[in-house]
Length: 373
Length: 265
Image 1 (cartoon, rainbow over the protein chains, first blue to last red):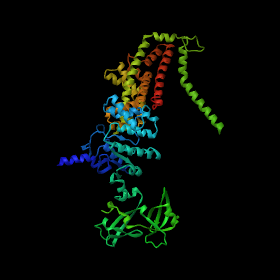
Image 2 (spheres, rainbow over the protein chains, first blue to last red):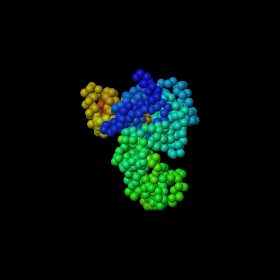
Image 3 (cartoon, chains in turn cyan, yellow):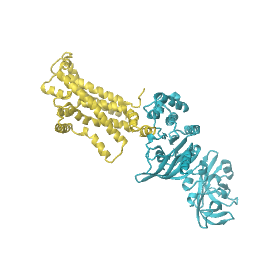
Image 4 (tube, each protein chain N blue to C red):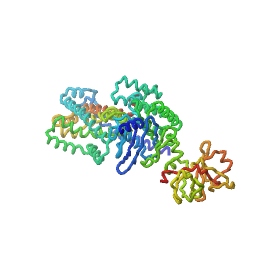
């Protein structure tokens, strides 16, 4: 039975991190990473610099060895297995193309290292040059290529062995914004075409959320949340994730009593609202609760409208395409942000310092599970 | 302001010209007198003559010295470049306690006064019964030249993206393959430059060779022998040839180090 269970696991997950810890001296780069990556999945690992995302990727590639725990690749424990004995090619942030080789020789490199014959090398490299639409540059030097072309060479070079998994370490960070979006589409389509697993490390939320099936959010070596982009966006697990995404208002509150039959009345700095009992079945009066309301779910009303809510004054406004982010300050100094269309805002005739009432529907509140254990 | 600049510029140019004159006048003089028929270097010049070149061409002692120099130079170039590459790659690749001490030690030989170096070499080599042989000159010059090779190759490796090596491992190249297909190709211009420069250093080196060469004198030691015996314009001819060969090697090395990125033009 156990064998069966293992076989099943093998077919589902291509990578398994089992309580992996990585320390460099006294510094813990990755703390208890414990997750799986599915076959054919596009997984993004996101976090700010120094959060351990690149170390996690390098451990998977075999460039670093875990201090504790085990990494399974395709069902096999790969701790201590040299990177040249794995088939986990990586696309580097610096691209790391060989400047002394031509484009074609760069693409052939991994095959040459594996002792593939000259003719077969040429054919397989040509296939990938064609796939990445860089055939015409085959005999060029690396330093004669543009940023986008180099990117394609790096991809062809990594994919030429037809691996089951491709690791990408911030590959687009050197490109300008326009090219970045185009390469995102190339990567997305490539991953769907090939059906192989992509593990994509980035600090950019837009890259992670637009391409990945699932996103891992890391901070200071810890995994803060794993989920689909939508899950993470709608239901951030804790304060760190909510702050990292940046579009939600975070409230620290205390339960003051029941609200109707299915809710709790909560007090927070500067106001009160109610939360659904479903989310806090075991809560008691006096308990602290942290919840968020996303900026686009906040409502604004004129101060003389009689609408119950929090009185706040406008501190500033930021233009975001068809909408604007309005920054408000409550009378107790709490900062709030509200995202609204320009039309709606013009009705309120807001300007810096003007008063406004902020309110929201109880169902817009999301309790942060990680803060309310 | 503009005038001042022009004066300063002019003075600086004059200064450089004087420096170059100071360095090259004796060499140029030696070259001119090597083609002069007079026995003694004096003005006015006598007739144009290749007599002195003919004499050294026919002198077996000069040939023997030259042959020793070439053998020593070639061997030293290869050995010093190998050692230098090893030292430079160790520095590039590894971090260990005492690394700065190791590097300081590896860089030390050129800073030791040559007389002390020569004496120490002589004392050591005679104790292991190697003094007075060609091998002893090779050993001594190897020690002196390796730091130059190491410095040149180290500079080149420091320009290398450290990810290149890891990328090669990541693509299935083990450590030997990576050395063979990534590190050495990348360092190739510097490796050749190191070969030429160490050869040139060994060609010209006199003091240490004088201490350890015994009967297997290299050309510079031979030249001193000539000078002690007699003042002959043949020295000028030999000097001119030695200068040309050294300059050729140095210029080749400079060309290689000039623009290492343009492998294929």
